[in-house]
Amino acid sequence: MCRVRIFTDSTCDLSNELVQQYQIEIVPLYVVFEDQSLKDGVSVKSDRLFELVEQTGKLPKTAAPSPIDFERAFEGVIQSGDDIVYIGLSSELSSTIQNAAIAAANFPDDRITLIDSRNLSTGIGLLVLKAAQAAQDGKSSAEIKIMIESLRSRIEVEFIIDTLEYLHKGGRCSSVQHFIGSLLKIRPVVKVINGAMTLTDKVRGKREKALQQLLDNALAQKDDMDTEFLFVTHALAAEEAAYVKRQIEHQTNVKQVYMTETGCVVSSHCGPRTVGIVFAKK
Image 1 (cartoon, rainbow, N blue to C red):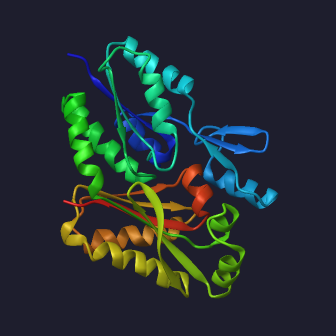
Image 2: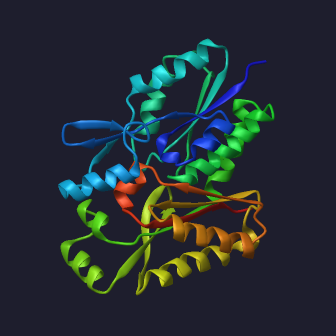
């Protein structure tokens, strides 16, 4: 009986340790700075991205892997006799899943199963880990697809953004909103709703207040949390993320709280000092 191998893309924001532990294959997106096309997580990481934004005053563009990129990634695994389950970035945010589908059509039917995560960052990562565990337990591609598509609507993803600067540079808030927000020290709250990034709230005041709001929002749902694992994900905010991690560990029954760093795609939208909490509901 063939094995099932789990594929995803670089927006999953899983640590190298988890990727290696669960033998997950990553297909990188691209970060484009003028004439430079860099592979997310391979030839550029978030700290370098923030340096380039500071130097140029501009945000990069992001681009999906091409169908050829996917075909090359899939080919060796299919030739080895294994099947593939690919869980990708929300189709509301990128053409990544569509390009994977174009590539999959060049292989025999039923060998590659595609799942739209309807999510981003470790919202994808959580689904990927669940799929990888199921694959290790011998579940088929069809069984994994049913499980993940049932679970994806129960993923909670919320980020506190430290500054409106990146949203402004990316055209997601006006110059007036940016000016007033900066003046009043407004920190946006972003959630994933129906597969898209949605600005749900604005916390005014000190950063500590915003972090507490993030924690309070998650802890209000602690009785509904899947207690297997939870993610605290950050961009250049390791100290604050560690604090959030400790609070989650102390105040919930979650068995494993992972702390991970955002990749370039999420970082280019949210900016440095972003902190998020990601978990599944029962």
